[in-house]
Length: 264
Ligand code: NDP
Image (cartoon, rainbow, N blue to C red):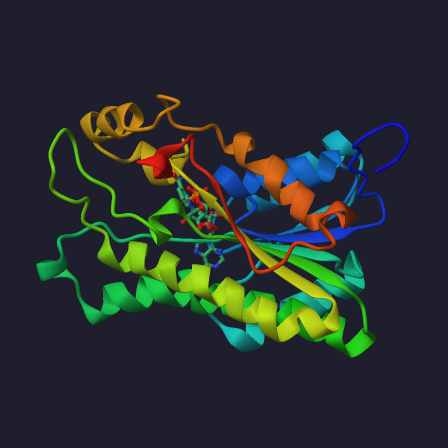
């Protein structure tokens, strides 16, 4: 900590953020850019991702560029990370944030639904974290990885005013998998100076939750001790801390930003 107190200055950093073009990811993109980092956004298909990213770069006067890359394809991910490292790097941190859900009763779920969720939420996180770690291992550089898991790594949400669970068992179980993946990768890569942690949001207002029945949203908000859903930017402080050198002794942990939801 400096004599001026706790300040985060990322002007020597390049941070990659998967799903950084909207929702929680966009809040991360803005936060790291505001702290002075160059930022590479990885997205899958949103038509405005390049424009959104460029605007963040202009606003905070940093290099910001969007890269179209489906995180579930290993070779494409490795190539994209090499490209980012050359164009904006060297990469110093990664927020593996891209995630998807399929909301359906378990009796209706298919193999395709499983692949859709696990290929992004688990294999996509694995692909991107390993691509970053490979680059760092090659050069002996230290790095920090923040994985977006979810409080649903620990609990099953309930639906509107009822006791029945919200039907997304693949999503919930994928987040439990990624919570464990965080610990496993942290254990393997600590020897290289690579730290791996998870930030697990509670309910956050994004496209993922705006499509929900408002009755369910109201019920869920009331079940949170702080009484509301979070704004995406309320997730960012913990991620900034974990990406910074203040977190040099933090690895293998999952931090819940959930308005107190997991108390009960
Ligand atoms: P959004 O649905 O708003 O955005 C998802 C992002 O992921 C988009 O940028 C999307 O890109 C990207 N993405 C999806 N699939 C791929 C892929 N195959 N390759 C590359 N990028 C991909 O999500 P949220 O902001 O709501 O959620 C962000 C993370 O936070 C997720 O991991 C989610 O599970 C987690 N989370 C969210 C909570 C919430 O309440 N919203 C609660 C707990 C956890 P594109 O725009 O191109 O489609």
